[in-house]
Image (cartoon, rainbow, N blue to C red; front, side, top):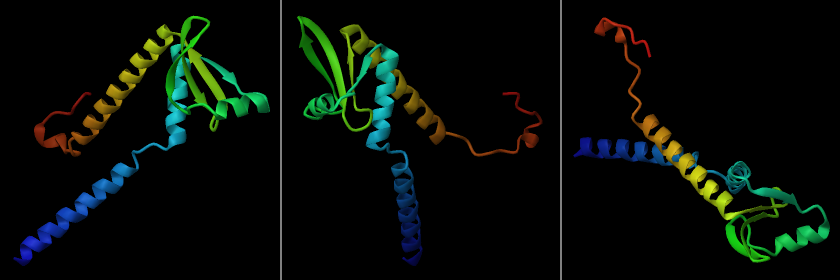
Amino acid sequence: MQENNIKFKHILVIGLMLALASVGCIKSPDQKAIDTERLLAASGFKMRLADTPEKLTQIQELTQRQILAHRSKGKLLYVYVDAEHCQCVYAGSAEAYQRYQNLALQKKLAAEDQLNADRNQPREMDWGGWRFEPTW
């Protein structure tokens, strides 16, 4: 019975350690904004600064840090507003938005691949017993 309690405590401690380690992987809202803004720029979105108090007040009233569709002069635009971090507006065409979605998906898949690779990383091994040295 006591052995089961010890095993349970070990499992609990390991679970807590894993939970705490995963918290370190969570990005702050500012880091998410920086990542998004980099992808937007790479996708062809144009960035304009809120370089006057009036412009800053105007964008502070808009939905923040979300890409939203907007019609302007009969054309569809995608707009991303960040009054806190960059104090700017990103605007892009439907084509730029499609490129953004593709880049975001590629980035997500690459991050998942890296996470899986990290989880499945074999322990360090002494290859001498195998009578060969890896060349990779």
